[in-house]
Image 1 (spheres, rainbow, N blue to C red):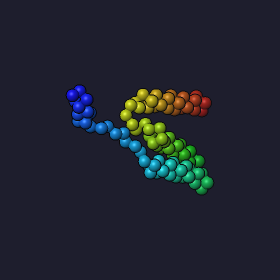
Image 2 (spheres, rainbow, N blue to C red):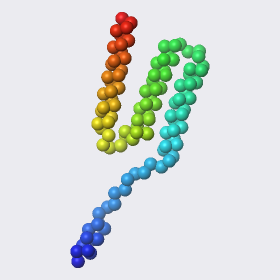
Image 3 (cartoon, one colour):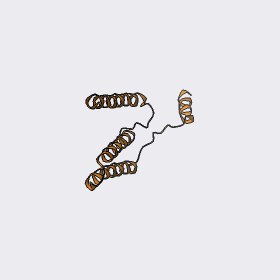
Length: 108
């Protein structure tokens, strides 16, 4: 009787299945990363743009690509990744603050 009860108990529980990302999402993410890199190279090769605009545009593309890769390749979008995201955000804040402080200190 206990074996029957045990099998009935497990039969009534729903099976939890993990979502498995197919290769199509990885291919798409890889193509987007390559396109962002190609856009960066193309804007530099064009060369007819103002230097300050070029710098701001390249830094913006780098930030977009870094965030995109965090969410796609490092699975930051999944549950349970709050602390790694918090620590990465804190590190980015400290790095940007230090860069701004160094530029301010050197030029003003």
